[in-house]
Image (cartoon, rainbow, N blue to C red; front, side, top):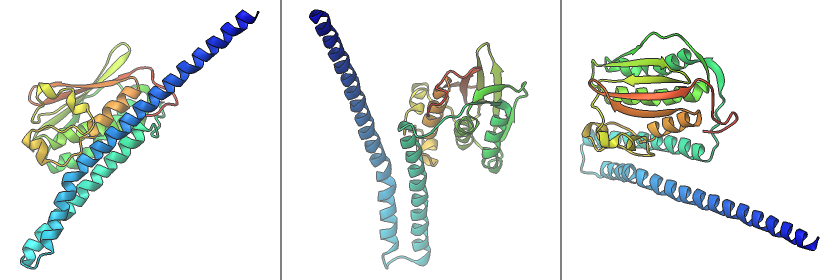
Length: 263
């Protein structure tokens, strides 16, 4: 009897130590993620803050004409807007990684979600004379979070508009399969080097291509898109198109993520 009781006590002790070990490991991982995020934020803010400081220091000197002073003030304002975009991206990432953004999947029209995303980006495309065409498809009501899925699509469409030349075309195709459906966004933009096919979905990653560097961006959008889709059991990848790139997103016909989970 005593031997059996001792054995049970040892088993309980081992289970407790194993649980404590898992908790410690998770805390260590969270600490690592926090340090990495802080390092990334510091690095991303360094350049615009330095540029902002220089712009206002130059504008404050007494040896400039009114036109030159105005030019430096406008440059400073542009840097402030860039910092605002960065901070907005940081807030979304921190909430995402702290599991504070909640997915609420419901059976909803996929076509309505896609059209809402197109409407959100329409004026940007119109200003560059870029057409966005949604190929006709039979609408499907699939379990997904309309708001965050729209956000994921907007990020992809925004990049397509941003890195495409005026007068080009963006095509959206929806192809259902057995258990998944595919949403493809094909542009006629600058294309993406194959070595960057996975990197572009990493947090804060931005290509060294001159046209990419010239445009405003934080390297957050595609990372958020990947996380949003993966949480719903989907995925995203990029491949070479006829003239530009094809972003292929998948969503399951039936929701396989955490029903009350978080992005």
